[in-house]
Length: 114
Length: 118
Image 1 (tube, rainbow over the protein chains, first blue to last red):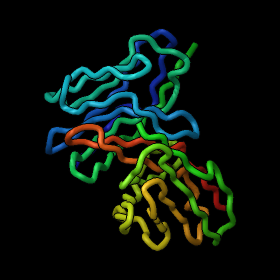
Image 2: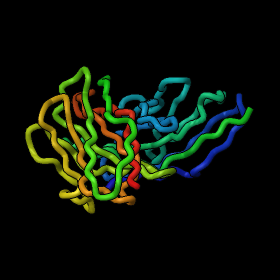
Image 3: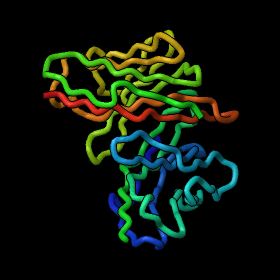
Image 4: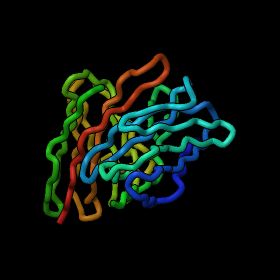
C-alpha cells in the first residue's frame, strides 16, 4: 500500500525567506508524486509533479521539488516566500495503476509573515 | 488541462433532505471522475471513482446508498447525498482524470462544494 506523510502541519516563514515543506512517501513501486496547493474554499491546483523523468522538478510560482529515492522524500521548496504563497499544500502519490487514484498527505498550512 | 466546474458552490439544507452536487468537465470528455470529501483543516479523502456508463467504485467505508453517484455522460457526474445529516457537512471536491503521459493520468480538480446540513 502507498502512503504519504507530510512533516509539520503548520509552517511559518517570513516574506522573502526560504520555504521548505516536507513530504515522505511509502510505495512498493516507483511512485508518481505530486504537490498541490489549495486556497481557502477552493479546489486544488497542481504545483508540480514527478513522473520518473528528472529528479529535480520545477513547477509554477517558483516552486520546485526534488525526488530522492534513497530518502523516500519529495520535499517542496521555494527560495523566497511571497505573501500570496500562504495556503494549504498537499503532497500526493499515485498508485500508477489504471485507477489513477491519488493518496494525499495530511496537508501543511503555510503562513507567510510580513 | 481540463477545466472542471461544480454546482452549487455552497448549499445549506435541512437534516433529512437530499442534495445533488454536479461536477462538469467543460472542455474534456472524461470517462473517469473522482469524488472527494474534505473536513475542515484535514486532507482529501477519496470517496469514489465515477466511471461513465457504469457503476461507481466506492472506497471502503463509504455508504453507497447514502452517496449516490451518477456518471451519465462524458462531461457530467453527480453526487447525491441522500437523507443528509449534520455529520455529512463537509467540502466535496470532484476531479477529472485526463491522460497525461504514456503511463500516468493527471487529475484536475473542481472548485469544491461546501455542504452544510442543519
